Length: 304
Image (cartoon, rainbow, N blue to C red; front, side, top):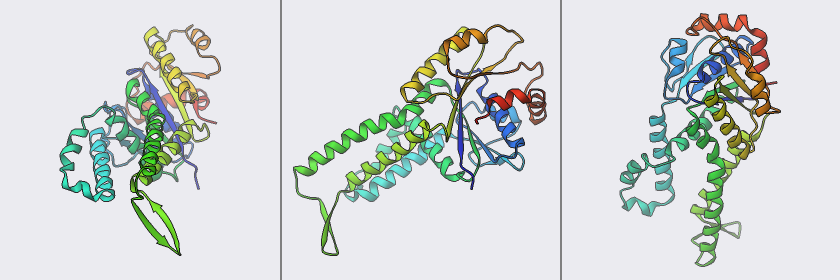
């Protein structure tokens, strides 16, 4: 059975992370690996690159490659619908209130986008667990960093809520009891739900931090703004105990003499360059030709 490995491609908008993720997906496909390329970016760049129409239903581009476009609004609706169902199932007394109205408001609340993307990501990991690679084309930096920060932030909240719930239970009668084989077991639906949420985010945080399962690539260009944002991304990931697998310089011109400067800024992180292409990298044939012309370069980018 294959052990799914996730590759995240992130960076400043316009640096070419969509092109980089598409190229690496094709390289892996040509090596016979089963690959799923999922775009979390609303710009729909993968559709332009492959000259195809993608949706949240997998589209096959050959025997080993499937591509999806995550619909963020649809994911938010799914996430809220699932949450509302869980609330109604666990706390029947709340059905007296118009919960649907409150959940309609919640879809506009801060943080909802990253919760929806996390739900989409965990669904993809479960759905494609027998594949070799899940390649994620991330949205622009701000949302991407909130996405990666969500497990730690949520664990901080659930830890405090768990403590508060335990304090409440210490000061009141036990909510309900189940008798089984002469023994009594305390049951608190709220606490049970908190512990499940905590377990889910602990597993997600561990996945992000495990280099054997997850690799992070930051794509940048040869310009000051791009490098500055790359530094901020790396600093943020470092706070999450995440080290990038590599930096990818996406060449926009044939200029040289810049990589050495970047290496001094990010010691210990491998840097590879996707060579400049005078031809537009649009369509399967153009992408395949660029890969054939730079095979050794792309092999160096691949995770070990």
